[in-house]
Image (cartoon, rainbow, N blue to C red; front, side, top):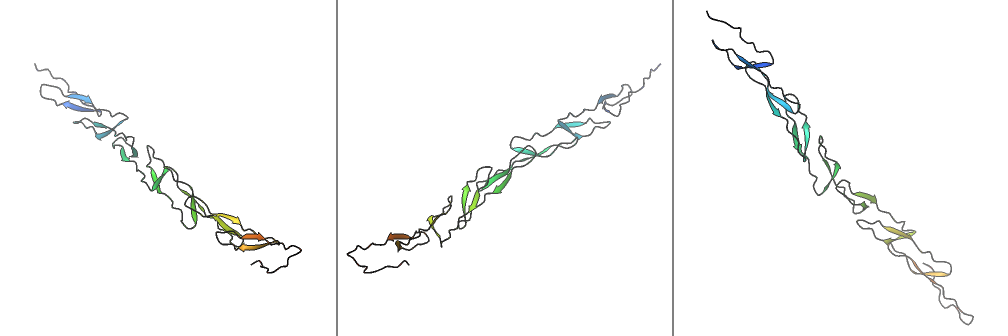
Length: 193
């Protein structure tokens, strides 16, 4: 007599690798399980296995813009590179891009540079000193990396007269009055200007 055997039934976590025939049983196999470093590109079904793919790994010059999930890959972008007229205002990391900011320019008429820019710091500018020209003169002119220096004007004493008047960049010059001897008289007096 014919002998009949119950067919194997694949479970919900299996797929059929070999279909049944009148004389052979079906074969079932467990669905592939994706690891923690993989994501699923195709879900398993009763007729197909699950397909897994290794997650993309961001390289040294890249950062992660989207983390991987069970069904999506990690996405990476290249870090921004600062150019010559920029400084790095925020460092690059594995999950954030590098931030670059334009280097500040000092005003040539009202500022001077106190600190030069570096790869990760901006140029520092300071306001130029303004001389009080009623009481001071400019003894050192300002330049790109140096401040203006102001010096107090010389004041002629009561025993002196002004030989050279003060200018914006020149001090006043004084000279002692000539003292007449007992055998001399004052021929001409020059008053302080």
